[in-house]
Each structure stands twice: as C-alpha cells, then as structure tokens.
Image (tube, rainbow, N blue to C red):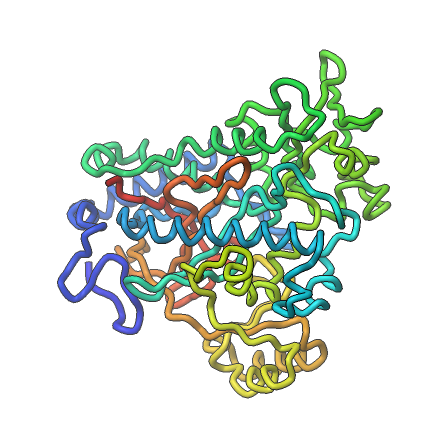
Length: 474
C-alpha cells in the first residue's frame, strides 16, 4: 500500500508511516490475497442482497433495488479524535434546537439582528402551523445528522446539518454487522467501540419526548411513505430493531384528542410518531390537501398535546443551507460558547457582492442549491467543463438567492479496496445525534466514500459507497 497525493490528508498514512488509529489494519490489508478479497467482497454483496439493503434512485431506469457499494476497508478514529467530534456535534444539536424554539416563539435572534428575518420567516421550510407551540422538552429536531469533512489531522468542518429525517443509520449498523461476520479476528484484535445499541437509544429518546396526555409506557410508531420510498428498508429495519409498529398514513386515524393505529386487536393509541415523510404530506387538513401519505387531523392532536411528532414539523428551517451559515452565531447567541466545529466558509449568492465573487470564481468553487440534497443541483467547479460552468452561471443569475457557494475542500482520503488493490478515496462522515431528555451519540456514524477516482461527491445517488466507521475504545 502506498501513500497518498501530497495535497490531501491521508487518514492512514503520514510522513512517519501508518498513523496510530490504523496500526491494526496495515498488515491485515497487505496480507489479504486478491482472490480472498474478491471472495469477501462477493460475500458482503450477497449478505446485503439477502438482508435487503438496497437503495432506489428516483427517475432512473434499471434496477430499482440496487445495492449501495460496500467498501470493506474500515475508517478509524482514535478515542481522542472522537471526543472532539462528539463535543462539537452535541453543541451544534443544542444550538439548532434552541434556534427552532426561538424562531417559532419570540424570535430573539432575529430581533437582535443576528439572522435576517426574511431568511427565517420567508423560508419555505418555516411552518406557520407550529408558531407559538412548544414541543415536549423543547425539542424540535430529535435526530440530527451532522455531515462532517476532514482536511487535516485536527481540521474538521461541518458541511451541512440535517434536522428533519436524516437517513443512512441502517447502513451504519449493517456495515458493522457484516464486518463482524466476515472478519471476526479484526474485532478480537482491536478494541472497537460498539454501535449496536443505537436502536435502543433511539427508542429511549423517542419515549422521553412523549406528549403531556401520554398515560403509561409511550407507544412509538414509525410513519413511512411506503415501500416505494428510497429509504423504506431503513424504516422497516429501525421498526424491527426497536420493536415498534411500522405504519403508513392509512394505518392511523384521529379520534377525539388522540391518534390511533388500526391493529388486528383493535385500535391502539399512538403517543410518539417518528415520521419519515416530509412536512407537506403529514396532514392533508393542514398542509397539502392532496396528500395520501399523512393522517387527517394529526396536527390538531399534535398541537393539543395528544401526540409527539419527531422530528417536529418546521424543523427544516434549521437545516436550510442559507441558515447554515449562521449556526456559529447561534452557538454564541444561545449557548454563550465558541463553536467547537467550524463551518465551511460560505458565500451567499443572495448578496450581490458575494454573488459577483462566486460568478467570477466558479471554476474553483462548489455551488449548491439552498434547498438541494443528495448531490443534485450542484456544481463542482474544478471537475466541470467550461460549458457546464457557463450553463450553471446562467442558473445563478436567474435566481441568486437559490444558491450558496463554498471552496473546494481538500477532503481527506481513506484507503479503499478497488479493482487494482488498495487506493485512497475521499470520504465524509454523518454521525447521528439523538436529542430528547438527554443528548446521546453512538461512537461512529456513516462514512460515505467517493469510489470513483478523484471524485469528491460521496452521495449514494451519485455513485458513492459506504464503509464501517470505527472509534477505538479507550
């Protein structure tokens, strides 16, 4: 195995050789013959297929249940590296929830001039239906997925926040399960912090935010759009792992002050709904009247304290890419602390001077739609043709407020198994922060890897893969 290009931080190698967190993997990778590696890769794909871990991509032909590529080479963090990340993620989750409580309440941060009013109150993710409502324990975003990138030994940046329904946690859990099945010796030789208690922590988090009218043990259900949704596997996986009902809108109904689930034993009250559908579809009487996915009257029960919806309707205003630029200000404003994790420097095209800079430097920047996700609607300047850059410039000129831009970061690389052997590939990380009565994380997260050589786009919908993420136990 060789080192990496000098311009990128290689998480396994530095000038002195193998970095300490990876010391248990160098011999393992070097000693694995190509035929064994190919056999193990086929075994992993067979396990993924048998378990049903697939990823549908809307609007594409071909296999609607294709596998996400799995890279067997784990990514490793030392316990010290993880402590810093965990502290920064907890801090960020606290600030984001304080912001949501504030903007649906008194709006002090807007009154103080720290965030422009129009970015909040004219934001399409701002839901007037919950203005003035305080959810149980003051939590709006119960599962916060923080996307992180690394550029050096101690340089971590937050790429974006996901406060609505961050997906991918099933891959984090299944990646670990499959690695433990295929390479049990690695787990005997290395002290790796466990992640398998995530479903138990999630259930405890959801139960801890049960509504005022809940009597006895809270009954939790996961609300899914159905099996055509790209993340349906995850919905059913989490319901199974938590031992809770997986329901669609048609399985629930409102009667009196409560939400009920139709079961073979008659109607059962539901106290907490972990919804995996967008705000617009939650309740046709409150949001989109043509929604067939939600529950008529659900919002009335929610506002009267008869059910908790996690994450809360309206939480999306906190993960808007224009709002993202103000999260460090939120941390200072609400917590009185300095940010532990830095944002990526960001230009807002809504500001004429910043837009002019972006248009002059498109070839060096990454430009994203403010409401975009999944790697769509973006331009990676250094990887784009002159024609693509010119076409994107016209899009920005037509609607500047719809775009933000960031420098093209030198994302760290991690060794990955590729056809020719082992080679560095760019990675990011999405840890999952649970917010309820307490704030909890499992040590690790979902590492996504850009398997195409030279690519910086790790999204599964754009050809990226996943790998197990290890945090070494103390």
